[in-house]
Image (cartoon, rainbow, N blue to C red; front, side, top):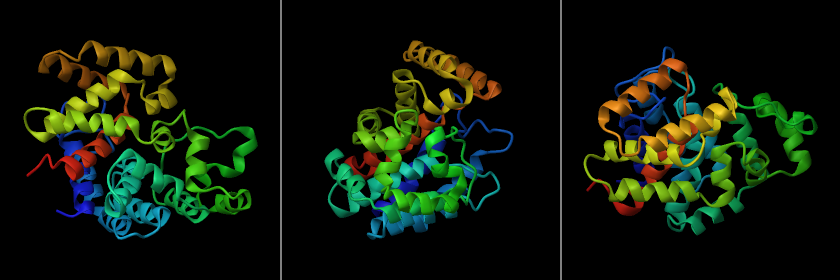
Length: 278
């Protein structure tokens, strides 16, 4: 299986894992975003992932992946996951799939890559915080309109990610060498049972370890910490307790989306590097 296909499969396995408290999975939908939207998004992302594996610029590959992902009626299914997957795919196809190789991809990004990142926001609505007062011209919600300011400041895509970390968990992975991604890949690789169950276990471990930054943005730091504490308390819980927690978060509209993004990236590492599916 090709590297880009492993990335697509990772997106499919991530959404198939259950229970993943607060997230769409094969047993839970949101009112406006359903399981099948994630399946369609994973299929739609193929051209961008293929481009990343073929050596096309990271920013252009990411925009192409997001544009394809967005061609389903649910809207934003996998923006953050694709932002993690594109540099990982590039690293795997170019040098190797290690933290150092991934850092090399990040450090090689350009201003043009940053422009591609901004254009991606024109294809789908993404929940983001308001920018600082001195960076309003760099607000990603401006999409392509912000590119002149990006070019004027000479910001690479790596620079843009640094502006968003540590308030954004995906950006923090970019700037720190993808530590949570590679650590969670071990859970997927070394776990027992079907791979979707291992992905769900990796998700719970990630959620228990750090507050989800998407939850913090949408509901506040206190709620994010309470979700983390509950996940930590349920690490050894039975299936019924996990199902109850999952249903509760969905009912409350508390969606640990950043944790799901990292779980998808970790699944790719496990597939590509460790061959968890023969």
